[in-house]
Image (tube, rainbow, N blue to C red):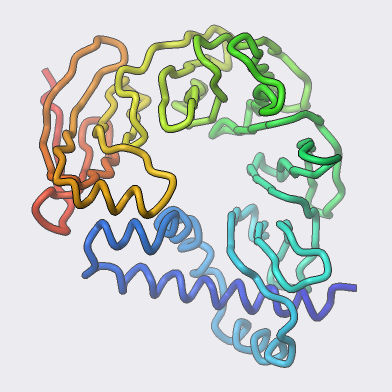
Length: 349
């Protein structure tokens, strides 16, 4: 049914992978600001795709592309996610020009045509060896949507795990725990709206199910894992006023006020240190450019979530720092006076 589309899909994906890799090297000489404007989200995509690039053989790519050159009505507009599991690639793409359109999830193992697994308005995927879990957003009426949480085995057989609205998912590094979060639906939310969090074990049995309170009208957004300790952000527009820390083994959790309440941050989940700057979050390029011309100070800090200690690091003129932890005690950030990245290491007693 999708034979021609499938051939072209793989060709375009391979082409996009190559272009992404090239874009990364070409942007080395650009300023950090230009990189951020022109390649928003590209860095995370490239990092995710690099491992995949190495697994595609050049000969195979050329054959597929040659066959696909005869078709032009099917287009991959953007690659959203790629996950690899035991040599099989699960690829989420935004499609335009096809009779269905929207977002699609494909499975490709390099030995046969790609298989279409799911499609919807949005799709997010997580690997839990040997299964793939995903959320598929579907429209169920005017301005009404639902998320289906689906589990796929290697053969593409699927099991519906959960249905809800405004759903987020996350898997622990060892695969022991699978978290489902259902945030307040945006058409019916208030300060008392519940944020429901479930933990499922290896057999998809719910072992924890609790409403998580917040002081504000926030969504819980997964941040990451420190072994079996799950971290999440309470997101409120541009702010992150609170953080959730949940032990998936004991089911004990705490909600902590985040005094590093800015979007330009990175959290060290091993020791609670947050590197962050007070660079504002913008939702349009005009506001961003206006701020860049304002010559206002932007300050980089370290803040410890557990001790309240705060350390001044650096100041720039209207320039974001984009800090990122590279190990337990060292983070890097953009130099205020050049396009280089600098490193700061915490002193350990």
